[in-house]
Length: 467
Image (tube, rainbow, N blue to C red; front, top):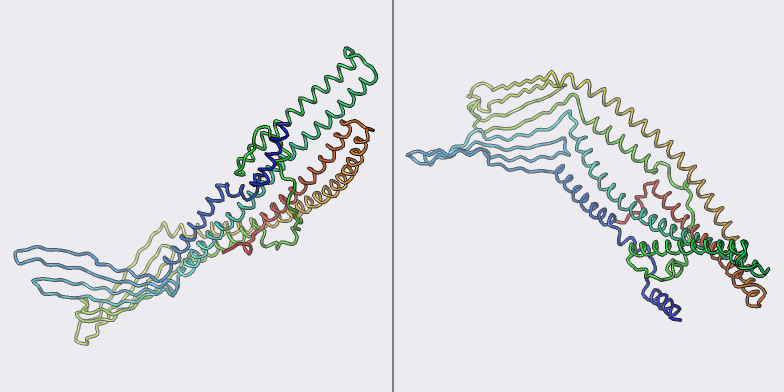
């Protein structure tokens, strides 16, 4: 009576307080979900940082400041400058710089220049685009990881729950075997065999062995329920009925068809295509030949003796860099124009450029092979998932038919038992069969959820994300 009252209280408080294992509580306790949520926030900040670095930028500098101390006082000279760059406009850059000197209280300014430079031929625009796309991709992948982890955690929840139901099924099967052995022993007793006879003792030993198996399975199930309850933020007390703890219903899931998903969104295909696209963009940005131009105006140019208009070109090709420029005096009475020429050559870079070009071609071929492999993997996954879907549907129909059969049989056996036609053990055997197939139906429902999750994880589902 006390045990019955205790069990009633457990079921009552579980109903009132909602102590049965719940998916929501399981997800709330998943640390990986929490970590990935923080990772998304980090990637959002990183994406903003990349946008700032590749946007309009202004840099102010005091330049080198020199203090000279003498009996006459302190002389100061410095070279302030300001640079504004607009990477998205052909790497356009505007610079203002000057040289200022204070000597004996007199401030002198010279070589004040205004200059404007831009790329004519370069890969900077493509590099900037690649950096922005990579930052956006990192954020997208972080969101996908969070999205997929939620699905994976749900799969883990139902996989662990299915394992508990599998243990419960084994327990019922063991009880069924025990009932059959008890029926056999009762028949031996009814036939008048002595307790000391070998036939009686063997039957009795079979009952004892099956009783031990039932007790072992029961303890295994209780242990599993206690561990699972902890993960779900609830509890499973010693002596509690596992069948009262386990959910009596599983959300019904309509099986998805893998053929309904766009093939191009297959995760491995999408990843291989993206890798080839971004790497191709980066390779295109790595120009062998670059050319840039600059122009400006210098006040009191010390090289020309007057204000000057400045024009220059710079180029590079496979380790060879050339630069030319001319400063044309504005004042007609000033000296001749000042010309600048520079050249550098790095033989190692010249040889490496050819090797890098061949390496890029090989890498491109590898990426195309990876795309082909992803499409082959997609074809295999389609066959695999369609077969799994058919198996689950077949098992669902078979289990439902068997359950209805045993449910009807259990109802008939109950009437026969109450009428005294059959023994309690025979009735309990029918009840165990009915319960066994009820559990198999629940396990089939969990298989459907796991199948759907497995199929969803094969594809990118960006449209499902919440901003």
